[in-house]
Amino acid sequence: MQKYGIAAKESSETGSIVYVAKDGKLLGVIIVADEIKEDSASAIKGLRALGMATMWMVHKMPTKTKKQEVTDIKQAGRLTLLV
Image 1 (tube, rainbow, N blue to C red):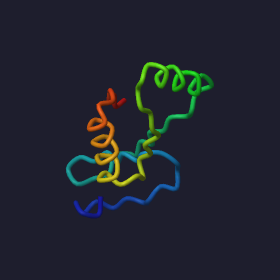
Image 2 (cartoon, rainbow, N blue to C red; image 1 turned 60 degrees about the vertical axis):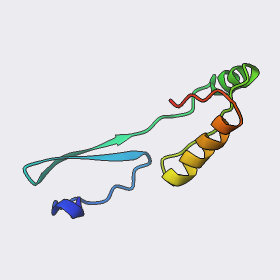
Image 3 (cartoon, rainbow, N blue to C red; image 1 turned 135 degrees about the vertical axis):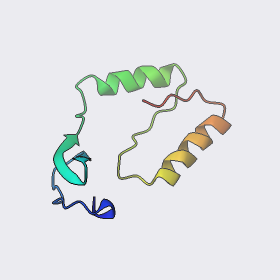
């Protein structure tokens, strides 16, 4: 927000922070987060059984690292699905 000259306090919440502004004024802050579900482990096992590569990509992971991981999987001929 500083880039646009809009005053906003940094949030200490966990998740992806979305600042909402209009006409140079901060209207609000939205924190987007997702918790690991109880059936996540079995879902991942099922995807792997189908030959799919799985990885945990967090929002703090550098974009370059994410892109390289996906490129490596594709070059190995593995099915790639990003959600």
